[in-house]
Picture 1 (spheres, rainbow, N blue to C red):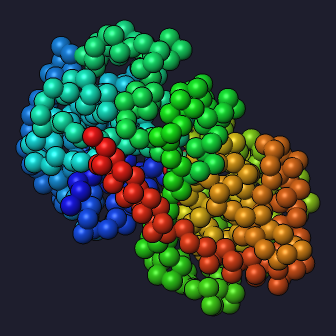
Picture 2: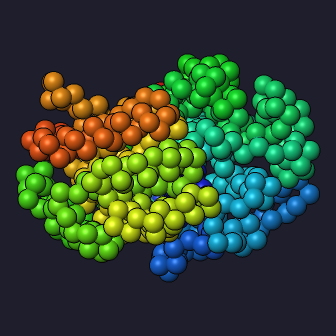
Picture 3: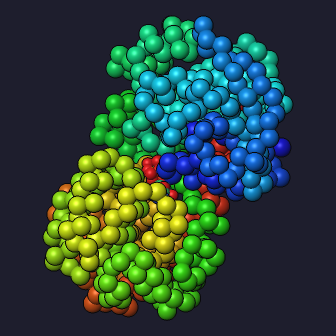
Length: 483
Ligand code: ADP
Ligand code: GLC
């Protein structure tokens, strides 16, 4: 039995700000349980979903040395859907209303977390074959492992995988302060190891010190090796080309299942979708105060409101879209103030056409995935993207920009061959996006048959973890064979 430890700053159901939590909260369930004992370790945030607190049990405590600081660490554990979770408790670091604060607080918080994770292993009596780290917050785990813990027998032979979910966030801060916080040896802050553009860079540390690096789609793996998508580290990624793998994310087929979803008005399958999905659409329109009309083209958006997600493009064409087409735009999201304010404004300007709910709601997200006709995701870049796959599972047709994982998961509609699962455009350009929305609108309105075929094909795609979990297993196996 191989032992694998996932280290992450978030995981469903305990704490979530984005797709990382979905991935870490679902992938461990899909490994072959007879051969892989996959466990997860997370921070025990004060803002964690309180409903789960009674299920956490105290295991032990110890102290973590961070240079001249000595910090308490408590370890808790819990079991959820057959997966064992550990939590690192420290009320000073993990306080506050969200997992992430200012970068200067976060670099210390996650240095502490990374070191505490390694210190915890003998206490929880779990000597992993592979430690699988996720995003910059855990980038120092492999660095500490090979420097500070290198001489200790308990840690000898542990392999590391570093997964990049978003290359834009790298955890960069002043070298002097990072040395002071982490207690890492000064000589590793050079341009082949932890230094980048004059700063310490946690993500770079993770990439350099891990045995293998993965990212969440094959296209994004290629993009981060180019100057355009490399966020300043494309040279590093090209240098690691031979140990860089693009493994497509899956979605949790138990949670996002039109047949059993408890959040939606009427459950359906691909067999009865045509007759049932309308009920969901009508219920959503009613709930949001939009005119209940079957022929209106309902476009959903569920997203963090950031530049990455293409909100500039949507804002730019919104007036045209709602005045020229019979469209109802339904938005659910939180994020940057400028976008939140813009969509508040559109909501009050076009009450019959635009519904914008600025906030976070699992229930509403499911209702939009299940009830809209189309799902808009015009990302500037997208490492994988889960929302477009969730939509397709419910027969909601994605309209996406051809980038990263969106390119790998959505096949463009071809009216001549009657093929494809969605609509896509290439350049990050609002007019180009508008043309493709118009095209989708006309197919929806004028060619019902073609639209139904699109829905059927989208619902038949396999976005479960089955395939990708096997690829991770293979990767772990190959690392374990390495000396
Ligand atoms: P990212 O991780 O870049 O935000 P993904 O598409 O990978 O994008 O994952 C986003 C996840 O967050 C999905 O599960 C989506 O449903 C969820 N989500 C985003 N915004 C909201 C919101 N306002 N309310 C509920 N769920 C949301
Ligand atoms: C990141 C990316 C998103 C990806 C998610 C899970 O948040 O922005 O594209 O799906 O991580 O890997």
